[in-house]
Length: 310
Image (cartoon, rainbow, N blue to C red):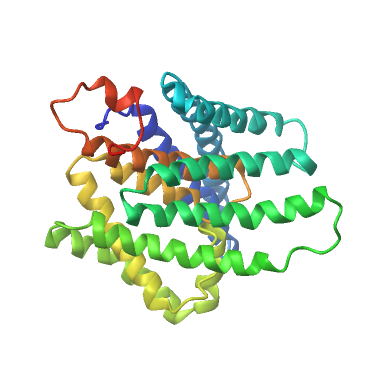
């Protein structure tokens, strides 16, 4: 992998994509399909394969999170961030044995918010990249407030949560449009045509069976599709263009965008939350590394990951 990121991140993205496309999309879509004996066998095989991919993705996500924490440690100014990432990883392991409720859940969401805030600050030279990070922050706030109310034994959930959810979904769409507008600049005509295929498929499904499209969207990526459908079509198209262009240029931006999409929106699972956190770290790291003059020592690229300009 380029940009001095190890192959671990590429394998994590592969596993996360399988987790997303099989476990959270195909197997759930199979619920609505009449099942013959052959189909049941194929469905069960896909489910088992998807569970294996999910387990592998979880292990790789923890490993990648640990790698990032280790790389952040040498610069003294980044050690607090390393400890936060370590705390998130430790809590996710703890939640394998005890439920994520009460003040432990509050602590987990709080650490995630702080980690995202640090990455958000580092992205300040790339305003378009701050939008997807802000979407993750909004999603985390949406989950943090109910956890805080539960820990405080308050009976009513905060009324602002629905507004936060809708705001986050709007930011997700704006993020995807930004990927196409900025990261997709310089894409070839072939890349624009290929990226239009999933956008057209989404449009066809939404216009023919909008209720089914909404259900699949919630199950797959967590979006309710409450905004006008052309915005979602353009966002799928723009994201596809950015990914294809990045892959052609062998840039880690493509892997970061794919990993970010795999995490979905407002995820309830720590593994999928880690997808988003690691993805935005990858995106910011890749862009900030690209800003470093070529004649500077390459050790700075990895050991001192921070915004290039003061």
